[in-house]
Length: 98
Image (cartoon, rainbow, N blue to C red; front, side):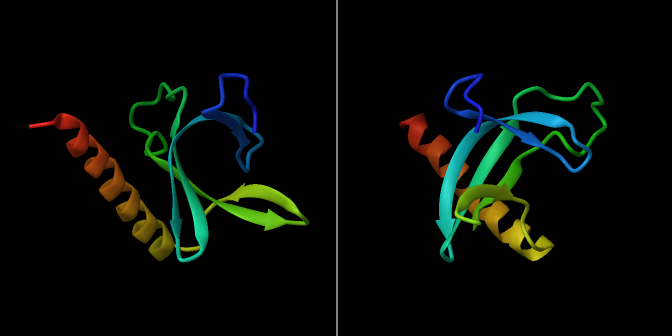
């Protein structure tokens, strides 16, 4: 992970070889797997793009190295996305203080 922007930012390379800066939003464990939610540090100028939302990656071990990987299925993505939304909204409600 790159700490160029600080400890909560990483640089990943997409399948086209483009570097993308991501800000770590939250981490959760689910079914023995570690998932991480990120927001792009720099939003693309194309406002119609669907790529400018929450990015969810999972931590995997390959050859003794920790790597970030995309999720394996749409079902896994939907399940983990819903869990992150619950966490984020719970944190937001806790911070409101009535």
